[in-house]
Amino acid sequence: MGRPPSQMQDKFIIRFPDGMRERIKAAADANGRTMTAEIVWRLEQSLSSVEARLDDHAKDIGLFSDLAYQSYEHGHELGARIMMLEGFAARAAAKLGIEPPSEGDMETVSTAKSV
Image 1 (cartoon, rainbow, N blue to C red):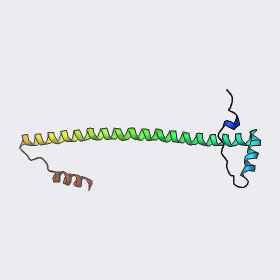
Image 2: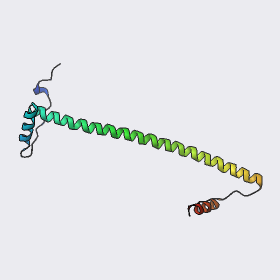
Image 3: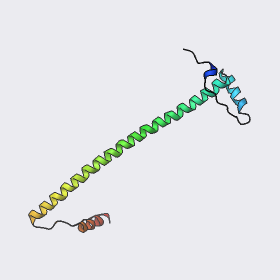
Image 4: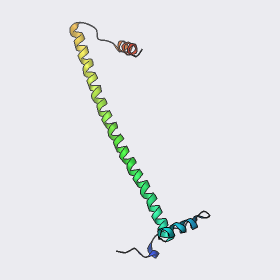
């Protein structure tokens, strides 16, 4: 299956800065291509590079999303364990006939450890 006739392909008119047409012509001649083929090849190289970087970013976003979800799940698990420990401490304190620590007491312990 060959290429479609050039009359049926998309066309785009572009204005080059001074000297660029000559640079493209020289590059096309050096690579054995027409100027159009040289421009299309260079655009394809550039777009492929951008698409590859976007794919890499999408993979990174997927990894970060997975890590965030795992952190969220572990946070819930940790919260549940803390609640279990608090319940255990309250029951143990009741059995021993002592008053469990209050929120203020826990803040005092946390502050003392960090000093």
